[in-house]
Image: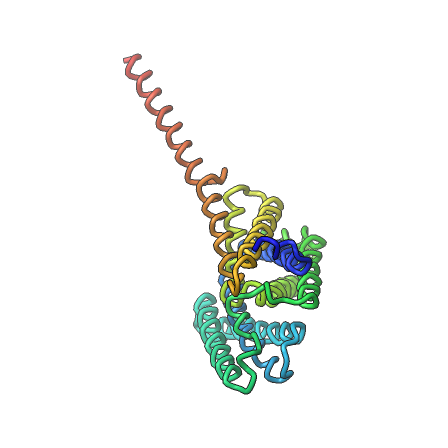
Length: 303
């Protein structure tokens, strides 16, 4: 059973999900500080109709074409969210929830139609819901690696610009940084990360890989730089360990295992994180309690 992890194809898949986790953790940090973590969930669900429509038009499962379809659908979802927010009295989180539900419902409807077509149930599109990294071929891995690498390069090369954009947009604009351009770039890297990860993790759970690592990293540091690094590290570990576990079983979906590993790392961070972790808070509370008791004894002795 363990020999499957030693095969070259499995090792390539493990490497690709590790890079995906790193990219998702880094992009998730941007979403965390932009206070748009729910946006990743909405766009992930919005990508499903694009995947199914691309398959219906092409007639075969070509990952690159399916990714283009997912990207187009997710971007359309982002435009709808922005339009609803700017043109109606509906708030942003409500608009996200609406797009998430409508687009995902449309995707499931189209997927049902495809599965009832001749040979449609052999398309493997169901793996895009919960993720199935084990069925990826070498060309799929190359596509994922290339796009995830582009996302990481954009984040690293524009680190200072991201910091200004997220923490002091007014000052950034005064320095000549285009806020509209940064918003477009942010949406682009978010959508790219989502569509890259939907086959490995699935449209339902890719948002979790964007959210949990950044929240976990927040319990260890206040620094944006170190939070970015830690979030990428947690995402990478979650991706490779979750994929390795799912590869040991026959037909086990990858996404849920990656999410469970990420959740375990979050619980560890929640308890032992040095920035407001529960255990650290408890120790600080006990230390403060002892200081209060000691000062009370001293005051009593003076009296």
